[in-house]
Length: 87
Image (cartoon, rainbow, N blue to C red):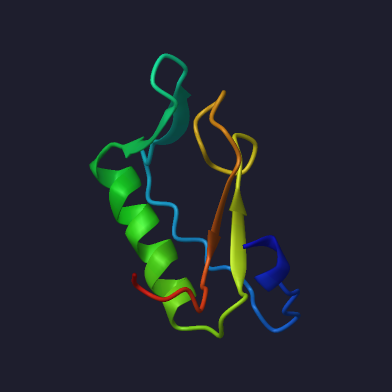
């Protein structure tokens, strides 16, 4: 994934954060499973971010971290439009 990421000066992430949105991204240490969860406003916010990225060229990405919208203590998350193919 990392080699596909290219800077795109023309991409400006929308600010879709809905009032009261809560999104959390964590790993369950006992199982190694990652969980992306949110309240209703958080899930709508995430959906808007993904739809926005889908409308741009592959390589465009958005960083989410606990200082940029995710709940405190969340793992960093990168949303990226990719050319990945279904298997």
